[in-house]
Image: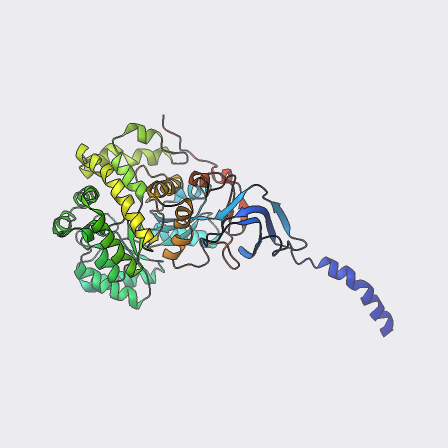
Length: 456
């Protein structure tokens, strides 16, 4: 009887092993040129094996074989890049689908209403809302009086430390400090943040960039504090920041007065601290053209609800900001100097991460990050350096080694493009497929119900 059972089992084994398909539940993306975000040369005819929302294997076809039973998706004649990361946004629920439609798979939310950003983060984590990976700061931390409603106003060192503690309890990814935080408040805040291992991002006004970076600030938003670090006496700018728009106008215009020697000194000092710069050139471009109807008319506002476009109320912004013709001209004149600083900073070894400041006025989410990449290239970065600013370098700002790169163990967030982004950076817009958390989508799937229109 035992011999009969053994014989039956031996006969059955080939059939059983035939049912065990090692690739079952896996997807193989085959045939594309893969730009993996590490800075390595592109992988020709690449093979990417995705399982359980992560990349299991990646490489050329002679090293990575498609496992039997895997779903194979041919991408011949296409290019694959990591999902884009927008390192500076102010997230709103309506913008979620727009980020995804434009290939932005992760965002760094730099402020916002506490309850709404936490609710959005939790909904995305639970899968009840489809959106990019969300890294929140919670409300901004500002001095007295706080610039914007909802910001946390701190008046003394003890309150500054408590603001850090509150964001740790919130499980924030980083802390965002604002323009009225001076050195007296920054020092205890940074000490507490260092003890609790939470990074601090800064939109500076009353502290220069080098001082803030030496105290441990992780990123300089909008290149803030660079002008103050480059001037012999920045006290006039510090006083101007008693009012947000007065300080913003003066610092925005003051770039044009900086020479290359001053920029070089500041850039070298910043590189020594390992601080990252999030330039948001697209924001400076917008402020230089607030009164330019032709500039506004060419913006890609598809998917931006008309109610939002009306709420932007650009004429009111111009009035509130006190912008006059000299300010518009000053912002535009400063752009070439900002570009020069970025070139110096990057060549010295600095970290540049791409951010858009969307969806603030004239900064539509998704499209503004692509415009930022174009402006980085126009500033003198190579197409690869610009692409890395929205992938690997932005992931560094988030302290993540599984975002912004395509390698075994990384999250399966990537874009399939119809043209080579290293040949032309605008090709990042030519998205045929988006893979998010291992699931494949067509960009049009995120455009259902869009209300926005291109203005005439």
